[in-house]
Length: 240
Length: 239
Image (cartoon, rainbow over all chains, first blue to last red; front, side, top):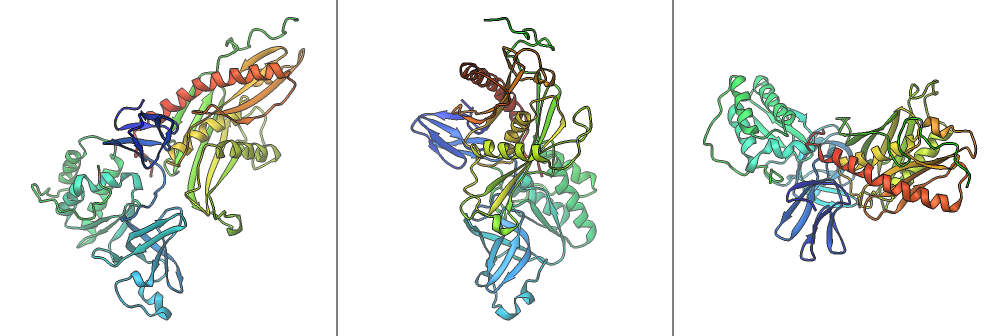
């Protein structure tokens, strides 16, 4: 039987007992709750789920994702965000009125957007950008770090992202699909931010990462602001 | 019953012994899932990409995602060069591996998509399809796909009258007496059901059921190696 918070393999018994409820990535076989995918088994009270540690990005409702426009249909846009299917952004879910004959004026092919996952159906993903912080990306740079490193880059309640923002003065938006948008006051600060994020991604499995990142930031000649109040921003799906 | 002409194995193994195994997970950073599996002189690499939208569109299934397995031996995998590219044999092996793996992978949550599994054999000393299946099962798990259980595969064989687990090339080519028989099989990890069973050669029904039991026993050992490899992954190591 698997210990609490342990890597489990498909078909492996996580825990035995009728009182446990199989959640995401787990299923029941008689009295046993069994892993239905490879990942870390998480037992919270009586709820058992398996959180993936590797593999492709699977969208979930409420995720922030960064993608590019790949198609314009008569009532919306299709966004490629690196998932199994494209996300659909209807005209009604953009923050301003768009003339249906001139949709490319607002969002054209190849342009990048930050959107929220509004709904996940087996047929695809519906997106929305009708909230603060979402919209078309202009300027800055987008880097790809892979979906499994996102929790480390965000940090506990957004602490890591906050530290990067404080040190570099750049605006950082982390998409749960593993894409990060960096927008700074100049190219130098953007490049520095990129270096820090890539450092975190490369050392995602290390314990005591915050301290190492602090040293890395200092090595770049930047100052780490300490005691900053952590504001929960873009932190959904952060480290549990 | 007459004595078998093959009693002592060429490499000194006992009849139920599997060649030394090495399993690794996460060998291809750019893939969604990857693994390698090695037994003796046979090595298989499996890479999983997807789920991703399937093209051309007419191949899509609106009810479920589909699994597509490509098997190939590398030109230098055997003593004389193999012409690269698909051939009759590789197409067939890809197809049987696809059927075997379909029994453990559940893609119903990803309609209109495809999960591609690429199996390559850099070193071949018999038992390549079972090594490929072992690697592919690990790679599919590593890709984080919904799987009811793991899949483990082994080739059981017969040289003259002796049943053997994990035959190598020399035993597969045994010509004396009754000759050689090769039975590649795959077993699911939890329910112990047979997901693949092929037979090349001659064998009696009683010997076949005995061979299957030997294979199932060997699969338990292989599963341990697969699980150890998957558990040693630090996680979050793939991009």
